[in-house]
Image (cartoon, rainbow, N blue to C red; front, side, top):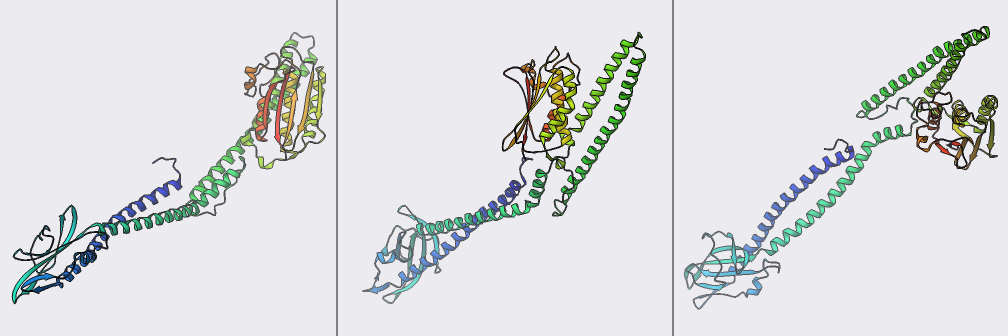
Length: 459
């Protein structure tokens, strides 16, 4: 049996197979019993016909005669569907009437003898009676044989079996319907658990309701135990992120501060160049640590989407532009913000959305110029329709090779080796977009430059 076969299919199989076997057995038994009963009934009719035939025998002028026409005999036991053959003769062998070719019974007895015989290409059922009679005062034994073809017996048996088979089929269909209903009702608690799990947020790890039948209670308890372990694991991971943030950011900040102080005191010292390199490395380490922490915090499996709220994306973009504008203008770049008049709110986390917009602006500022410093415009635009809100961050730079577009969201992948960076900016953007059920698209602009589009479902 296939291990992936559904419980419903297994139950139907194990209900259907025994029922089918019992139905076949019942049909075979019924056929045997019906054939036996019908044969007994027809044998009684055949015996009655023979006895009635015996009463038609009389003596005339010392001779035995019969006053019954053949065609009246044919209606006695055959229901008009078969053939009747008879023979009346004395025990000494003289035929009084009937068909002389009928086979004699296997034994002679004063009791009725039933036997099967073939005559004139017909399979017959015959009864033989030996009766005492007087002919002119002289005793004589007369043998009466009446035979009937078996068509009527077979027809009646077949009619009964067809009717019984039809009843079996109808009963089987009713039984299958009842079984399907019973299975559906029996599996309803499992379906309820499955539906409850499907409707949950991926981050909702609260225990399932254990008010369920005792057969599936162990399954629910196991799921609840697994959810509890996962919740503890996530809490431990989040605590680790907080510890890493505290343990790494503090010493890196101290290194940067000490380096800046040393540079002021040693402006003419031979160690000045080394201190500058230490400062650069410390700033890169500080930036990388911040990005790593953001990457860890924005993993979709660690974010509880049930806590997302209605967010004004216009305000988020304003804050991100205000945060990045000083550095943008310092590098002789321009920052533009374009929006429609009405932008509906989206469901999201305001902090993560601010990280998303900030990362996109900083990514364009660092990498838009390729090997040269970028001096163009970075445009942040918001558009919307009835069902979605689209955020677009674009530049007028050199763009990205088409073969490398699909790699830009990989961790630590850096398309532009000429500028500093951690290689995590677009990876963080992708995770935040996934958490907010948004679509992320990275494309080159036809007029030149690179464009990132994030499409959010509107509330």
